[in-house]
Each structure stands twice: as C-alpha cells, then as structure tokens.
Amino acid sequence: MRSDIVKKGVPAAPNRSLLYALGYTKEELERPLIGVVCSYNEIVPGHMNLDKISEAVKAGIRAAGGTPVEFPAIAVCDGIAMGHTGMKYSLVTRDIIADSTEAMAMAHQFDGLVMIPNCDKNVPGLLMAAARVNVPTIFVSGGPMMAGVMNDGSRTCLSHMFEAVGAYYAGKLDEEGVEEYENNACPTCGSCSGMYTANSMNCLTEAIGMALRGNGTIPAVYSARLRLAKHAGMKIMELVEKNICPRDIMTEAAFRNAETVDMALGCSTNTMLHLPAIAHECGVKLSFDASNEISDNTPNLCHLAPAGNTYMEDLERAGGVYAVMKELTKKGLLDTSLITCTGKTIAENLEGVINRNHDIIRPIEDPYTKTGGIAVLKGNLAPDGCVVKQAAVASEMMVHEGPARVFDSEEDCISAIYAGKIVAGDVVIIRYEGPKGGPGMREMLNPTSAIAGMGLDKEVALITDGRFSGATRGASIGHVSPEAASGGNIGLVREGDIIAIDIPNHAISMKVSDEELAARRAAWVCPEPKVKTGYLARYAKMVSSADKGAILEV
Image (cartoon, rainbow, N blue to C red; front, side, top):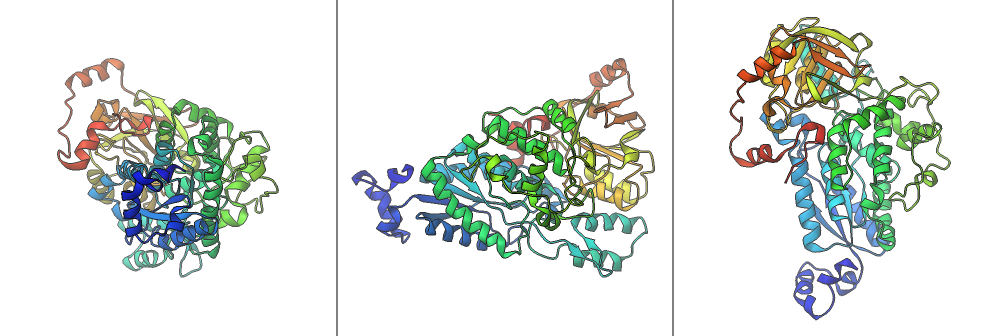
C-alpha cells in the first residue's frame, strides 16, 4: 500500500507513534488509509450538510475494510460574495483548494481519496487536485437545493431572487415583493436549485466518470444522498484494490464526453473555465474551437433554470444525468467504452437506464435546439474567443447590433442600470474585470439580473472580460479574451461604437476599422493594478487568460 511508508517497519516507528496519538489502533493502520476531503463549513448553504455526508462516507469506507482520515477544503458561497469585493476571491479559491488538497494528500501518502465538494469552485478545485495526486479517487457532493415555492404556489430559485432586485429598481416590485422572494428562494441546504455552476460541475463529475449515478441530481435533503455517500465510501475500496486512478478515467475522450453532456444539459458558462483547467492537470488540452464543434453536433435536451422553469429535483426524477447520457448514445455522441469510478464502462453503467419524463429531458429526436447550450464567439472584439450560454438567450437576441455603453468596473455599470441609463438596444461593456484585471474574474450576476428584472433581457446585451454566474440568462457574453488588462481589444471600445453579435454564426465584432483600432492601441495605457498586495496580487501575476481556463502558469 502507498501508505506503508508511514505505517510499516522500524523506519516508520516515529510516524506510527503520531498516528497512535490520533487514536488509531494497530488494526486500523493495517488497512488502507483513505483521505476524506470534506468541504463542510457554516457560511455556504451547499456545504452546511457536508459533515453528514462525510460521516456516511466514512461509514462506507469502514464497512468495506478501510480506515477513513478526514481533512478539510475551503469553499466560498458565490451568492454571498456577489456584488462586492468578495467576488474577487471566488475563482481564485479554485487554485487554493487544488494546491492545499495536493499538499495534504502527498504529505500523508493516502492510499485513496474521497472528495466531498458541492459549490462552484470547490468541485473543479478538487478535480484538479485529484488529477495531480493521481491515486484512486471518487467524488460525492452534498447535493442540490430544492426549488422554492412562492405564496401563490409558483416555484422559484436564486436567479429569480436576483432579478427581483432589478424589478424593484424598475418600479415593478415593492419591498414586500422582494421580501417574499427573499424568504422563499432558498428553502433548504444544498447547491442552488437550477443548472447553475455548482450543479453543472457536479453533473459533469458523473459524465466524466468520477462520481456515482445521482451525484449531480439527488437533492441534498434526501436520505438517498446519504446512501450514495456510503456507496461512494465502499466503492473507493474497490478502486484502491484495482488501482483505478483519476488519469485512467479523465482521458481526452472523457473530457469530450463531459463537454457533450454539458451541451445537452445547458450547463453554466463557467464549465468553459473549469473543464480546460482540469484537463490541463491531466495533460489534456481543450480548445474553444473544439467546444464549438461539439456544440454544433450536440442537441440541447434540457432547459433547467435559469433557461426554463424546471429544477434539479425534476431532472433527478426524470432519470438524472445518466438518462441524458442514454439519449446521447442513441446518436453515438458519447464514447461508452471508457472506464469510470464504478469500475465499469459507461456502456455498462447505462444498461437499463430510461428517460422517465420527456418534458424534462427531451428525446434526442425532439430537442429544444439542434445545437448545444454553449457557444464560443470570435471576432475583432474577442480574437481568442468569448462564451455565451445560448440556451438561455431569447430568440430575439441571437443576432443583435447596438451602441456600446462602456464601463470599467461592475460597480459603475450597476449604478447606471439602477439609474435607468441603460435602454433597449444597448450593448453594455464591462471591462477590466478579467482574471488579471479584476483581479479574480468576478461574476456579473447583479448587472445581468438587473437587466432581466427590468424586462430588458430581450433587448439589451452585456459583454465582459469577467464571467457570469450559472444563474445568469439573456445575451450575456463573458470570458472575452484577451482581456482588457492584457491589452485586449475590449479595452479599446469607446462609448457609442456599434457592436455586432451573431450567436448562430459564432461571431462578435465592433464596427471599427483596423486603422482606427491601431490608432487607439497606440494611445492605450494599461491602468494601474486594482490590487497590489496579498494573494490577489500574486494571482494576477500568474493567471492565464480565460480561454485557457484561467490556470496559474508557472
């Protein structure tokens, strides 16, 4: 066993003495040591139940003959961090999580790992760590939140809550109405109830083969979630015995499968940051161009919130991620020969799986659209690409031209929106919010929700070198690369420039001549960094552009 170096023989006697100090018995140390990476904390609703998940995982490990050893990973609640300087610290935690987990796993030489994440950066951070450490690993998340119910019986969720604020500033909702959303939008623990980033990533852990069936969809409050955790604890022992490791599972073909499922589900645009970063740790390169190829050939089968009015609990009842994958196999869109954390192939995992609700998961012969949920656009505004969740864009905005309304920060933009200065036809530009320029590439959920809440989501587009929450809907185009702080053309846009967006043809441009752009570039001066000390300053010096996954470059 890998852990023998700290457990066996006279040279390991000092190590054993410290393990005995922890209360472990000789009998426990004769078994494989399984690290249980638990992201429990008391500030993230998606993580408040992870202590229960961890106990269930540990029970499963013990039942299958292993010795569990728990240690923590951090997590940020993007919703609580939204709209202020705290959001600068969200994406950057992905690398802290990966680094610290790698350090703990390597320092203590565990034989296997069970990762217990739930929310946005926690899942990809732990997947990155799993790839680096490359010992047998399985994931089991905390599960999604249930949808809320309003006083009139209609269902609601966090994206409605943010949009309610925009409706208030537009005079469409009073304070009592806002309070009703406030009290109903988030009724249980769990990752927020739509196909937002956390749920997108937890679903993709199933698609890529690193989690058992139901990981992405079984609600946090269901007892089935605890049973899943116990089974994950048992299954890690089988993976250790067979020495099936993350890089055996997360191959280039597996990432292609994950992107295909991503397009069918209509996942968050943040997956376009996280999948390349995880792939990078596996020695696999994912390109924006390949994403468009996959999207062009993958029907969109699901319209969960914010794209529609269905939620994760509905997807679970319809058959979950496996039912979506089963539909995709009907047209040969997945490589089903790949090994997974079940110890079986995808084909074996999908035996007997059925789509139980064709309203929730459209049959592949009758999709919402013939192309996938995400598109990559390129042009002189984004030479290296930018990303839009096209499944959540109104048909009226798939092709749009309008004058640029330019802001150098999220705060300036949101003030203008609330003051009624953004009107139908405008194209809002928020720049210097990218990985370097932010630093930290903040999510722009407040501006997009304000636009939607004011009823302008079918008339106004928003473009940024920052990113969006999975809860964002509308013509919201992010990850513009190169970003403004790196000299990208988005930094050269001027108020009133005409911006042309053509999502079906993957194009985005500003109608400014090459000569004029050259003149503006000659006069452009890079602004002073917004943050000059601490972790964010170090992060800004090392982080890559968004099209590469905002990875830290050594």
